[in-house]
Image 1 (cartoon, one colour):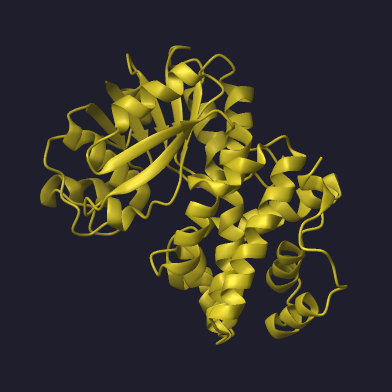
Image 2 (spheres, one colour):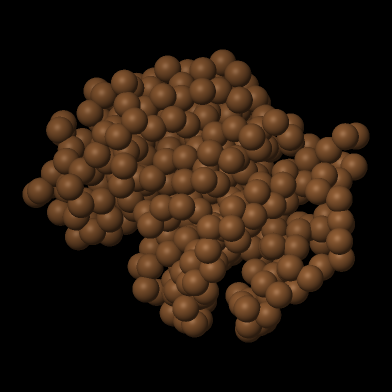
Length: 335
């Protein structure tokens, strides 16, 4: 297929390498000229994904308009806050048959829209696929076996991406629950931040296990209120992605959480991580959505207070642990 991928960070680079090595005709748009020259010269993106070599030639460019003609797939691999700008810039420049594939995981802060909703607003005729699941770029770049889920309201389109993107080390399932897949991918970053804070505060495995378990439950509650299938949160884009981001040092969200738990400010932690920490903005989005939907999300609320109101993390943990006694499973799951 003829594909244009927009975004030269670690995940965009990993997918560009995978698709290029599979034999697709790939245009790779990267804004940073230095990164482009690095890949041209060294066959790898040393800044964001060192060691992952491109085996085949790809078309590298910092002019997005030059790589939109006659493409079949447009892949978004930029931070959530930049997606509206990118999609607006390609409006009226691509065919309505071009499949939009999103690799980012977040909820737009201003509109509280999921990325599929942003895409349908701007490119209403283009089919949309969310690609999500437990997948660190660093491991995909080393050809370590990885499994994801492709979700779309159009099953045939999801199956097309499943077929064209799958390799012997990159297995893709399909799931028609676009709301659940997108919400799982976005909300797990909040819990990964909290898991990192757990480590930075020098708490143990007991507290992290509880945090992850109650975290997937909290994610499910908000997702269900938006129309998601609760079973999706038990799959790759839910508990699968939650496990990998809460336990791995590849996770930017977990690393940022560790630094915050150790006493650094949100800004200091994000600067030290050096790449976009999606969970920081997603905390704000989810906090607003929960208020709007009247959904109780105690972990998200605690993180919001720590990140945006300067609350002491230890005090936030104390308040979580001393909340009113409750039954484990709420009625929402039985209705």
